[in-house]
Image 1 (tube, rainbow, N blue to C red):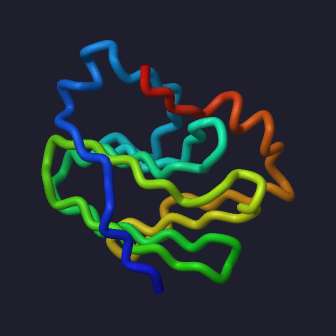
Image 2: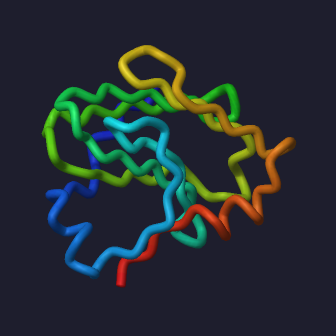
Length: 120
């Protein structure tokens, strides 16, 4: 298991400033937790609306990364790895599976084009 300590964390107001441009798929109405691309890497995007997000990400069925975001009203991004090296991603929120991506079924290039984050 890999404990990921480095994260980019900002208040939700920065999403409205126009300095961050995103096209994201949301997993539920309370918290936005999804995978986007920054061009070269898959990035976990987490908008914490509820207050406690303990997130585990399984990459390619063999690597586990664990993240915590207990700051209500903040969003964070965490790099998961290079897009060409990742074929499967499973996301767990507070021990419940919320999203699974299998790029042998999903068109990876199309997914990257539609789900991205760009820092202006």
